[in-house]
Each structure stands twice: as C-alpha cells, then as structure tokens.
Amino acid sequence: MTALYEVSKLSVDLLASGNGLCAQLIQRHLTINILQDIDISIAAGEILGVVGESGSGKTTLARSMLGLQPVSGGTMCFDGREVASRTDFSNLRRNSAFMFQDPVASLSPRMKVGALVVEPLVIQRRPMANAAEKAKELLERVGLPASIAGRFPHELSGGQARRVCVARALALNPRLVIADEPTAGLDVSVQGEILNLMTGLKKTLGLAFMIITHNLAMVRHVSDRIAILYLGRLMETGPTREVFARPAHPYTRSLIASEPQPDPRKRRVDLAIKGEIPSVLARPPGCAFHTRCTLAQQRCKEESPLPQSLPGGRTVRCHFPEQQPSTT
Ligand code: SF4
Image 1: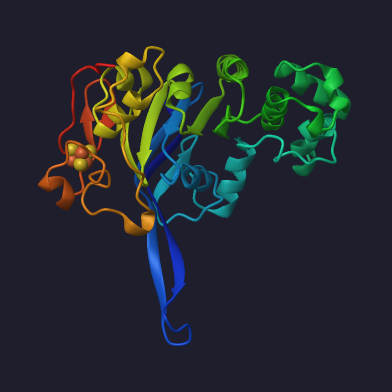
Image 2: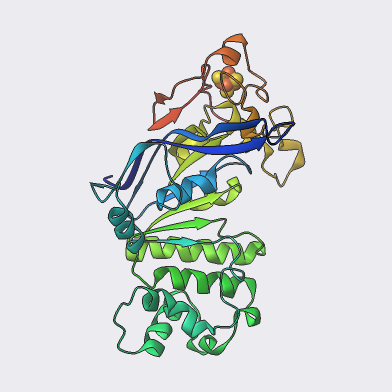
C-alpha cells in the first residue's frame, strides 16, 4: 500500500531547565530524548493504532506529525512530498484533523453544535453557501439528526459529543485524522458505535486514521496495523492480526496478557506487565524495557536493540524476539 503519511527516523528532544542548590550559581540544562528513530507510515483508507502507556510519547508523536511540536531529527512525507517548512505544515494541517481526548472540553461551551461543526471552515475562510445546510450535512454524515444543531455541548451525551467532534474533524475534508483516545470515558456499547463510525468513514471516504491509545482491545477491534510505543521507542509494528497472533516483543506479549479476559483462568498472570514505566528523565540504558522484562539478559542492559524485520510485515526492537504463537 502506498503511504499517505510516512515518518522516518523521527526524534524529538526537549530542553529541560532545572535549578541546582543555589539558583544564582548553578543552573543545569538537560536534553531529554522523548522520541527516537520512529518509523511509521499510514496509507489512505487505513487505521493505524499507536498503543502505549502514559509517558510513552504517544501525544508527542501526534503533535510532531502535525507540526505542533519541533522535531530534532528525521523526515516526514505527506502524499509523497517532504514536510519541512511552515508552509508544508500549513498544507498538511489543511489535509488533516486532530480529535482531542475530551470531546466536551474541546468544544466551546458558548457555541451551539451547528456553529461548532462548521467552525473549522470559518477559521480557514473556506467558502460556504449555506452554513446551516453544511452543518446538517456534516451531522448526518456522523449519524446525528439535524435538530441537534441547536444544542449546546453540555446538552449532549458522551457519544453525541464524540460524534460532533468527528463531524468537526470532517469539515475540511481531511485525508488523515489523528484521534487521541477516541473512546475514552464512553460506555462499551457507545464505544462500539464510535469505532463503527470511524471504520465506516475509512471505507466510504478513504480516510486514514491514526488512533493513539492505551486501549489494546480497542485497536485490536478497529485497526489495520498497530505500533507499540514504549518510552519513546517503537517496540513492535505490523499488521494487527499478525501482531496479535505472534507477538514478538516481550512488551507486546505482556500487554496482550494483561488484557481483561472473560474467563479469568485464561489470563496469563506470569506474562502480565509489572511495575511502572520509568520516567524519561531516568531512561534505562540498553533496552529501555529491560527493567520490566522477564527475559532480560546482561546484553539487554548494555546494548540498545535495533529494529529487525520479521515475517508477516512485522518489525521488532528486541535482542531475543519470540516468534511462537500467543498462548492467550
Ligand atoms: Fe527484553 Fe532484552 Fe528484548 Fe529488551 S532486548 S525486550 S530486555 S529480551
């Protein structure tokens, strides 16, 4: 599949300033590596799920890809053209949309739904023959009745607010939508409706979605490909079905083992992830995952693994990747 958006060797460093014991005398400046060597591609009509715990760098990755976060290295190409200058990023943002995690907080409480869904067109000064008609069209596209245009955000249910956010995202006819935890805080049945909506838009409009989430079960249901992020490094990528059938990285195996099971006896407690993700300020040397990995060996503590290709279109960053089928 031809990539719509391709990111190669993306790195993001942040400069952190901290005061020492005596503020006037000692001032330290630290460079914190947030993301390193990220290779990601998304094709038109494809859903990519980026999974990681809090602190893994998911949001920084999304912001970098939209030009909202300066990058330290790497290249980004959208529709075959490198994105580097401010003009390139402006063009990219015209062709993409970002869906925030908290739908109600991302909507102005003083505006009615009808005005909210066409607001991106107003901001971009796009011509609109009839704003009310356009709002109706966008609302219908996400399965909402036109009558909802007269409501304020606080009068919406969680599912309706999420659909309004999707309608807003569609206003500029984007080719790529980056969605941050699109089902957070929703009931399971409403989660399913939102995911079905996104899958439908992918098929009917050829939209590409990048979903960033900690919810592995959700991406398993909806995404075509998956990328597992840990402490700013991509640990495993590949087609969703392949990754779940044969998780090669110990972290992926642990995440899958930690998923809730209808039958608790089937849960692999021995593989379930333990402990907290370390801070980026105290990144472990060698493999970033070695402090939580049950398979860690001396080499893991000293040498950072490089990405290696596996059958089935997968890539894994581990010295000792597993290749047997999952037992969960
Ligand atoms: Fe575990 Fe070592 Fe693989 Fe890292 S490189 S995931 S520590 S086995």
